[in-house]
Length: 345
Image (cartoon, rainbow, N blue to C red):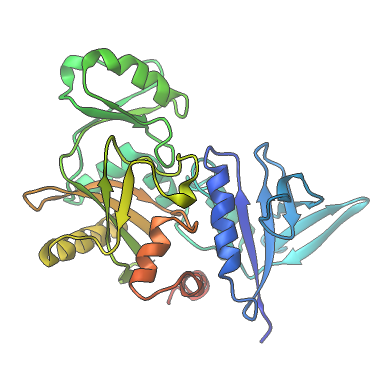
């Protein structure tokens, strides 16, 4: 059999564009070229699609050919736009290495569904659901999973501080990483925090701070067949956890360290893993996701958020947790491809 033709989409128009490019570079380094023939599709910050040699430093300013993903399932691949017409490339599978808005929120997944090409990761429904933290909390809560107390504030609403128990976190309801997130300890800080969040989303989420350790769980699989990586624990020196916003994240975070495996009791580890799997199933996730939770001193596990396509950079949590469980990124890629094509690992 010949190599599988895999389309790797990266970049995008969200605030997480640079992280996506770094994730794609790490995927490229770990892609087995004896198994796969890669086609790298970079989406610039302005939304232009380019077929390029790879996610190198110059791809966005280079001579990549204009390309689009055909919504015609008969084409089952790419339309390469050329003078006087176009040529086509049939793809076997797509790996959308995209984070945040228009990549992880169901928009790209909808286009991939139209294309008819199998793709890695969550579908339209679960991508959109997990991106909107308030909806994710509502669904998880209905499944019996603990969530923070929270309030939503739409574009034309104001919030009465008397309703809140401080401290709270104010964040965009539908955004990735910790862009636009503020910890608020007093009522007078609330208006500016809401305005900061509104720079990223018209819908703002306010949630009570949960006292406890922040624990992450990497999950791989579909429905009943799930593999979990080693848990990690975020150890903070100050402030709160800000992912992907450091000046040089490759050299470490400015205020946190991810401890892998998490230094928590075995009983707590099992409870966290089972809770993460319950969240994954309740929200309809497939392929892969990272479930972030709080572990309280009394042992209760509370959902924080779900990342339906977590970072894959050299410093990202998901690949580190999987590697600690004996699954290097190359094998994670192989398994997610198999899940996309056959539904099984």
